[in-house]
Length: 385
Image 1: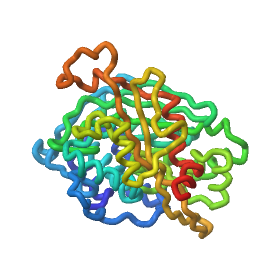
Image 2: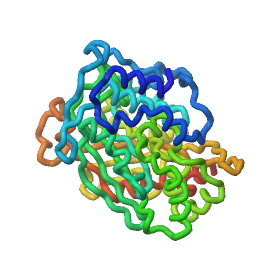
Image 3: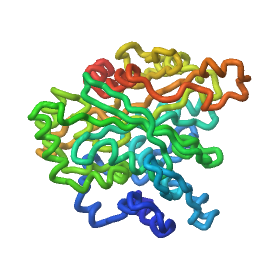
């Protein structure tokens, strides 16, 4: 079933959902605003070699069917206004985002298969991450609205002056996971959305970004759909423009070519049940299997308080055909790993009673700054060297 059919079907089932979600369905706008930049997605991904239970393309809507298709989650967004979005619909959109991500990026897919082969339990995501352009309504808010409409809560802001970026992260609502579900069907993950502070860039870079965002002004309304379909919300760029941005900001170049595609998903390491539930052991395991990890600032990134430990693979590359007919290999996405330690005040709680609320929450600027480097050419060159 195509992602458009899935979304259209949910429109019929779920009347009364927010205007943000209803905007996902305008077929005429889809045809006018979205231009595929990558090879067509497969109708279904190749079978998982180790029998993973992570569902990639065909989503299970039995939850909606069991409730008559009208069971709604009522939440309040950051402004306190009530909004309603059906959980099966929400998870279906996340599932389409995950499908695009896994179809395009063999490393994350292989890592997930490998971890599942060792840890045959529920595999949980710590967070999903996206990149955006902070201009003309294309920034953080364009994607955040989708998550806020389902009941996510805006949390802290992070600033990266050297990279000319800012980010916000969003905490998920309490929602039941699909029984036995992994990935996006498991406990809902945090969401981390960053944006390039375009007005701080050079005039040349600003001109390139404005060229594409201003000629497709309505694309910002369909950020979630763009991610779910694996399509850019603007025209494909020229190869020379991609190179212009890359010279000043590899983040900017990545976003120009990848748009709202999932930048990465993050495995919640401490939720694993096997010996891989310690990030140092997981890192060692992956390196022994031949995976290259981002070495910027050291393979293991540790927050100053010692409570948040993170690492990531180096991004995969994908063949991209630019609008001038030039085809180049460009960075796509990667997979991250996060271990959140128990907070000092909860150290005496029995391990069997430890919950996520007892662990270090949030994000750390120093860690995230180095994780951003996973898509940089220096790391990709090291991978192939």
